[in-house]
Length: 299
Picture (cartoon, rainbow, N blue to C red):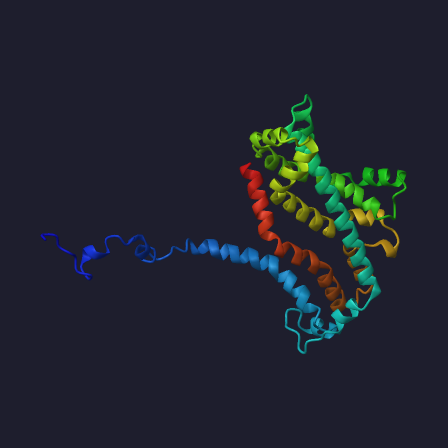
């Protein structure tokens, strides 16, 4: 009967309750150096301001742009965008860019995943040399080899053809793909492959059933990068494509600007609509890109 019970309001009554929860909001959050945020805002403004000027400029008339280039539309004019959306020229170039982008992305992902699997999971004499060759490909952008590349495309009879753009883009997109995917494939434990072999899975079965799902973050990353690079590619279509029917959107923007150089508002509207798909695509999958690149660095 000597045992005592603590009062509900006594300090000992709540001894089992974790106290860490009450300490989280005690210290004010540190915002860091204001100069860092100021510099970051400057960089954001430099990147965003041209895009906003272009998009908003499409809602203005030529007289408004001439009178007050940095002003807002007054009134807002939607005819510039509606004319572009109603033109067969824009949608034809949009379709060409979409075909080139999708086929290029599929080619880069499929071939890059196969090559990366061999480099990451097999041992052979020229393994290091092959990986170094792809790594060296990062130092040679497409624009450096555009003249000899055009001669090769011409000899193959692929000038003024979408495949004359697709095949070189796949070739020049493989180095980045291999560099990103090899760490993902190396990180797959050997025990998983051994267990799959014991269960009767062939090498192709292990590749499709285990490797592809486990490396999906890296595959999505390289696919997004390949599509965006293909969509924004200008120099290769400029050399390869000759007829208006085969123009992609970046090349179509330049030709539209040349043809309607006096109609600044329409040029801004056309350019904004040509840029919009890649911008939306990148914004939606931004986290996947960052996550895939982070996984490649960790691997």
